[in-house]
Image 1 (tube, rainbow, N blue to C red):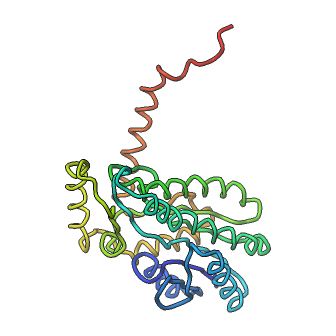
Image 2 (cartoon, rainbow, N blue to C red):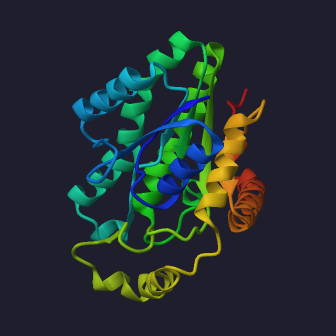
Image 3 (cartoon, rainbow, N blue to C red):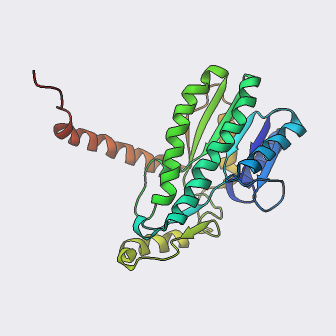
Amino acid sequence: MKVWLITGTSSGLGAALARAVEDHGDAVVATTRDGEGVRLDVTDPSSVAGAVAAAMETHGRIDVLVNNAGYGQLGALEELKDAELREAFETNLFGALTLTRAVLPIMRAQHAGHIVQMSSVVGVTSGPGGSAYAGPKAALEAVSEALAAEVAQFGIKVTIVEPGPFRTDFSGRSLRFAAVPNEAYAPLLAPATAAFKASHGTQPNDPYRGAQAIIAAVEAEHPPLRLPLGSEAFGWLRAYLTGRLDALAAAEVLGRDTAYLD
């Protein structure tokens, strides 16, 4: 039986994962910021230390850490205030890194462990209005890729999860918008924002089935470094990566020849 420490379990994929892990027969330390379970504010180092200590006091080990706590922040970069940007990065990036660092000594002592970082397809590909959400997710992916190479020697594995559209509260109460919109960006952002809001409650993917895929990855002998979730995620990422390769080829004529001329 594994012991899972999962953040952000009050709703969405976090709640579904906590339920699926229990159904799988493993133990769950479920954390929320304001609701039931272990109280955890990932932006507060003392709260992080307390949650890790509570998990160790109850179970004596932490086998899987899932950094799921976070929220969506939309808005053009120019219209977002410093406080909005910093809060998004504190929660969606630095909170995950603080908790990861807190758990790593435990996993090293165990010579085993698995860190699951909840990213998004926009951690790979972003678009208008997505800078404050895609930015921390992209950084989380880069840090986690380096982390995977660092901790493999200790028997610790890392998986970055990249969900597509799931039927959660992400596009509802978990979504924030720029406090002071800039009308100059409205023609670009308004249609996409309206479509995003309209999708709430009709997203095609089941959070519980997504959770089962995460459990399967953790149980795999050779888990993937990146795990897209949902057919849309695979389609979007394939299209984006194909475009990147095409753009790389087009840019080569401009940027390749930079060696010293003898």
